[in-house]
Image 1 (cartoon, helix red, strand yellow):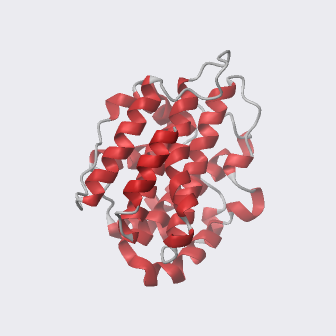
Image 2 (cartoon, one colour):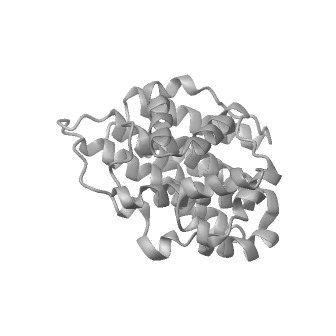
Image 3 (spheres, rainbow, N blue to C red):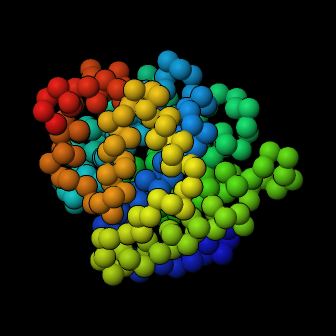
Length: 261
C-alpha cells in the first residue's frame, strides 16, 4: 500500500488539473461495483437504499461534469447540483450509514467504494485548488484500492486488509495504468470487466433487484464506451428536479424515461 501511494503521488505531480479530476473520477467508477459485491445493498437500511444509490450516481455525474465544463463553469454549478440531490442534508453520507454486515469485510469494501465516490467529488468541487487537496485526490484512489483489498480479505484473517490478493493487485495495476493513459491524453482506459469476476454480475444483479435497471445499463455502457460519457445525456441527468432527486435512483430513472431520455 505504501509503495502504491508513493507511486501515485509521484505521478500526480506530473498531471494538470483536468487530468487529476479525470483520474479521481475513474477511481470512483472502478470502485462502484464493490458497493453491491454481495448481490445486494443490505449494508444500508431498506428505506434509504435507493436514495443513497442515487447520491453516489449523482456525485459521479457531477464529478464528470467538472471535467467537461472546466474550472470556471464548474465552480458555479457544482454546489447547486450537489444541493439539489437533497439526500446528503436529510440522511447523511452513505459511507457513514452502514448497517452491521454479516460479512464484515464486504461491508468495509462497500464503505470504501462509497467513500471513493465522495472523495472524487471533493476533488471535482475544488477543481481550481488542487494544490491544497492532495489528500482527497489520493483518497479517491486509496479507497478504490481498499474496496478491492477488503473484498480479498476473509473475516477470520488477522490482517486488516489484504493488499496482496488477486482483486487488490489487479486494482493497483489498473489504477496506475489509468494514470499513464491520462498523462498521454489517451481517453481510452482499460474497460475489461472480466477481472471483476462475480463482482460485476452481483453488482448488476443488486441494481436490478432494487428497480434500478436503468442505472445497471448506464454503468455497463460507461465501461463499454471506455469511460467516455455523452455530454447531452449527462446534462439531462443533472437537470432532474430536486423533488425527484430526493426520492432516489428509481424515481430519477422513471423521470428520465418519461421525458424521452
